[in-house]
Length: 283
Ligand SMILES: Nc1ncnc2c1ncn2[C@@H]1O[C@H](COP(=O)(O)OP(=O)(O)O)[C@@H](O)[C@H]1O
Ligand SMILES: CC(C)(COP(=O)(O)O)[C@@H](O)C(=O)O
Image (cartoon, rainbow, N blue to C red):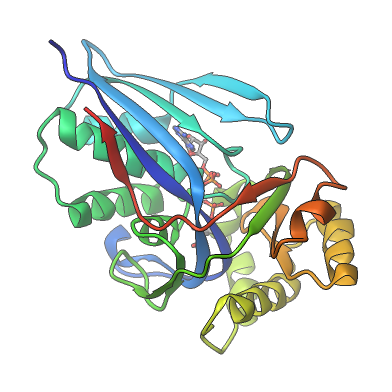
C-alpha cells in the first residue's frame, strides 16, 4: 500500500525582529521574539507520479480558500528529488503575519521525511526549512521559532539562535484584516534600517515584557497600518496588552478579556502557546 504521512507545524506571531545578514541563507535571519501558537499548518504527503500542491488558505472572515501550486513547496520537493502530492491546510490566513509559510515548509518536510525515509533529524528539517524560507524572502526568524514551542526569544540568526523558550499558560487572541507582502518589507534596505533602529534593547524575562517590547517596536518601526489603529486604541483603553502581528495587517493581544475587545472589530481567534514544534501525526 502507498504510504501517506500527515504532519503539523505550529504558526508563529513575531512581535519584533531585526534582520541579520550572514554570508549564506543558513546564517541569515533575524533576532527578535514571538509566540509559537497552537494553530498552524497540517500537511499530507503521498508519493505521486508528479509534484502537485493544493493549499487550503483562510480569508480573514474564516471562509476557506483553495489554491493550487506553491513555488516554495515545489522547490522543497525538487531539492530532494522527490515526487509527491502535497496538501497543506493553513488554520490561519496566509501572509498575515502568522508564519504560515514557515509552518507549511516544516510540516511538509516532516511528513516527506517519514514517507520517503529521507533520514533527516529534527534539526536537519529545521535547517533546510530555514534556508528555503530565507532564500524566498518569506520570513527570517519564523522557522527557528516554530521548530520548538513557546514564547521564543531569538538572539542570533538561524536555527541555533533561539536563546530562551518560555511557556506561560496565557490566553492569547488575534484579529486580522489581511496580508502585508513580507518579501517587499524584508528586502527593502530602508525598511530594514527603520526596523533595526526600533529594535528593543532589553531582553524580555516574561510575557508582559515581551508585549511591552513588541508594542514599543511596532510604534517605532513605522510599520503599523492605519486599519489596526482603532483596535490598538481599544485595547489600550481597556488595559489589554496588544501589538501588531509582524508582518500582517492584524493585532494580537493577551489576557482573558482580549477576546471581547478584539471581537468588536472582526473575527477574534483565540490562541494558546504551542508547547512543541513540528510533529508527525499519522503514517
Ligand atoms: N500553507 C501553505 N502551503 C503552501 N505554501 C504556502 C503556505 N503558506 C504560505 N505559503 C507560501 O508562502 C507565501 C507567503 O509567505 P508569507 O507572506 O511569508 O506568509 P506568512 O506571513 O503567513 O508566513 C505564499 O505565497 C505561498 O507561496
Ligand atoms: C516578521 C518576519 C520577518 C516575517 O514574518 P511572516 O510575515 O509571518 O512570515 C519573521 O520571519 C521574523 O523574522 O520575525
